[in-house]
Amino acid sequence: MAPADKKRLAGRHVAAVACFDSFAKTAITLLAACRKEGAETTLHLLEIPNRSLSRRQRLEIRRIDPRTRIEHGRWDGFRKLAAGMAGTLDVLYLGLDGQRSRDALLQLKAVWGATPERPVLVSAYPGILFRFALEGMLDRSGVDLLCLNSQHDLETYQRGCAALGMDSSNAVLTGLPILWRVEKRRKEPDVPTIVFFEQPSIPVHPLQRRFLCRQLKELAQAHPRHPVIFKPRTSSLERTLHRSHGEMSGVIDRMSRSVPNLQLSFKPATRLLRHCGCAITVSSTAALESMTMGVSTRIVSDLGVTETLGNHFFAESGCIASFDEIVQDPFTPTHDKGWLMSNGLQPQGMESFLSAILTCLARGVGPLQDDSTGPAAWGSMSWQSFAIRQGGRRMLSSGGARSSQLKRHQTRSLFRRIRDGLVGFGWLSKVLRGR
Image (cartoon, rainbow, N blue to C red):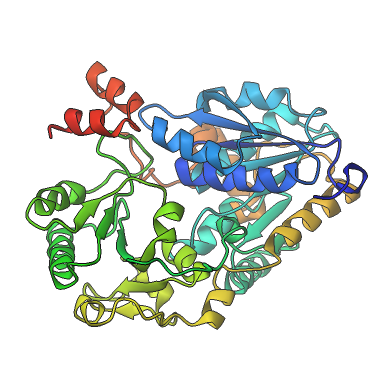
């Protein structure tokens, strides 16, 4: 560890706000990098109604960097929280989806106005960009530092900004932050497992999900010496941003009663990968972690290779395979290391991030615009002014589209809320699920 006088962020205060699991994990990863350079770090977990993090998710976030202070609040209190940050905070990371990134930027303009003493604003992605990539980047274009995963993403952003006459120099190539500290596995496990990583909304159709469950059962039967583990994205007890479109875990749980080596596990992905011999998914970011560790990785092709599934992102990775092919040889790595380096893995990504932060701090960022509109990426000033007058901040922050994350299941029973708080007690979770 560097001596105290060598730490480049000594005396600085860096904070992050995040509402959802994956964004919070990325946020605390960025904060950990800053803390190791001497910064005081704080993560503000802001709860959204009916989307609060479970106990298990909060524990996983804290494990990434136990020394970063975590504060809890509510998203509707963001404005009040931000009011005290100008002049006291050096860097603020917005760990938010695109819509809330817009909303946050508009609220920060309203709160900070033209004050010259404000934090450097940062945004980064918690996963791969396989849908609405440019749209998401432009949603965040009002920040001072936009961290991007790959050269392709950077070039896409630059082209979009050029078309709108915008400066794209706020973007920096850092790779996926979750890969910064992932190391290649040194020892192969004695009895390697096969792990399927579920995603909450992919695939979307019940028949497709039923097919995947059947294939996993047949895979377990074909390799009885190897545990075949199904890793759910969330427990059925948990509330998250995404809603699982069906209970694959329930189907697997029932199948496991007749197939002993077919199992469910809610352990963090990084822990499962330590003993994994083959990681399988449709398009989860866990595939990039697996490849980085040198684990054999397979991207399911049985349902096609499409934008809807997101597996088109991996088309040139060397990992696309059908279940028939996986059954024949699950344990031989096939991924293209060059492709991985171009699509998320940046060995110097952490240093690129820290250097960019230091550059922003040295240069100074100046006040936010003192009007109520956003960057040109959100539309012309005429449109934005009209949108604000006619529809208010919500119209502009949503980009004019109805949210795809409409609040469903608005009412939650007291029993459901109690169950959410108990996730992490495995035996009790099973009892409450009816096992």
